[in-house]
Image (cartoon, rainbow, N blue to C red; front, side, top):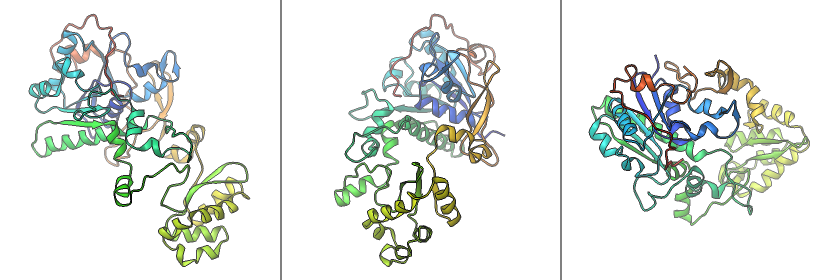
Length: 400
């Protein structure tokens, strides 16, 4: 039994944040109807690397979904969304605030139409506040949330993480909000509600002790490269073969095992290094001692020695490493997924892992408008069929 079987989701978002939330719900059984502009579809269909004209990213982001092509600017398209929303449990959107209101599809209108509807709204800065009308993408949310300032080497330009982490974090916060709202509605007898997620707030929410440290001590955390400020020792250490070992010796007992492994009983038994605050005060000394040991050994030797000692250690993975790693494969995190044309593609598996109601991939990403007839016709969700001609307009105002 799929955990979210019977939950009907209408996805109006494009690109990353909204669709990632829809993807996650669909993987656990929700029936997700994705609304796309006819003729062009979600721009993600053309993002990054294409195979036979379609992004392979699209095959992951839109698996398990159905596609309906509509022009949300047209009265016919807006009427179709209202009819679909009337029967939906959840509606997901990531347009700039006010866009849906301009189409007569805002929260007040849809809540009046369907009081049980849960509406997930992901935007750059949220539905309220002085920045609400500003367009925002993940990169801006990452910067405003405090992440960009901390990413990179000291004294160098702040760099981005390498993926659109702000969008994905917002999607996951959105999923938490949707599931909480579903529980409130169905287990507590409540009504539907709006879930308001801002990109910058989703990033800010995982920024650990940034604010209390600033308030208590006036501290402004800065870029620290591969180290983790205030926690020691944990860093990337160069090995004899030019590769790097990631070693986390910051637990009190783990630190002792690490020092024993590298032949430094003096540091192992130093009472001033027994706890983290003492180690932080001498972090440069500790890092130098660890690298003096790693730099004379290959990465494989370092990994084997510290694994045997029970010290957390690892390598830096490329995607080539990921695709062949036995741990990934044992947990079905790299799976062969069938595509609509009958071919197969290696894609990421589903997380989290549920013991009784695991998620899965039930069908491939849809062709544009593949499910118009069944979704707004006689089959699928029970709605009246509108006229949906003349659609080829790209939807505007996406937050991400």
